[in-house]
Image (tube, rainbow, N blue to C red; front, side, top):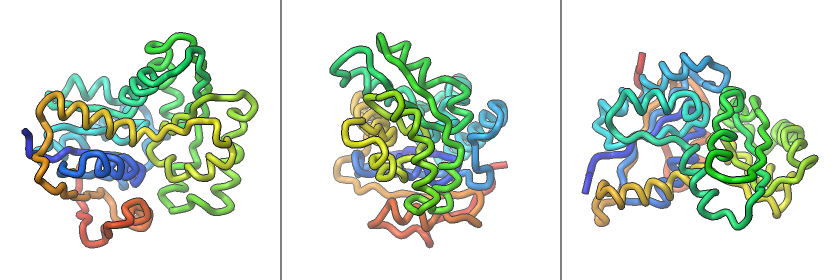
Length: 270
């Protein structure tokens, strides 16, 4: 048993979709969430900058005595995870590997057509395609960068006319070439899930990476005997690098049973 909290970080509010799933699947775990809102967005930054920011986030979480770190950011996962795993001794996991392994484990046929939507940085890295095709035979991957969605999510524009038009445009490649699954490769994107479903219909499986990493985490903690006591009721702490943003408004929509206004602390990771 390990009573220490799990650390989670993202560039903004997107990682709260991951935290929500972890709360659901691991209600006994304490969580520490760091949103690097001062440096949002990560998606248009260089690999070197993303690695630098990721190390600062991880070092803050380590200072809070976490037992492991979840990179709840698609861009940071694709650009930085290999580097930071070599630097730090504690367990670190991102959103790509758990999702790919879950797809592989549950695939009912070969020759899958899988769509991936993500930030420009993630698509440029080609990490989703590399990992999917390494693990599965005959997989065809269709990538689409959706640079407007994360900033819109941060503003709370997730179900208005602008959001609908953006989703309609971004979904065109997946309507022209039929896909079996669509991976939401940025943790902000589950906020647009209803609009995406309207465009793609019910036959396409929409994959929320937060759900996949929560299931992975539950299995990992159990196998390594790192889970908290079953009698413990998990608590969460929230830190932001800039509070002049719409984080609270959007996060409260996700965590309907929890109001964050008085729980958020501003910190400096520079």
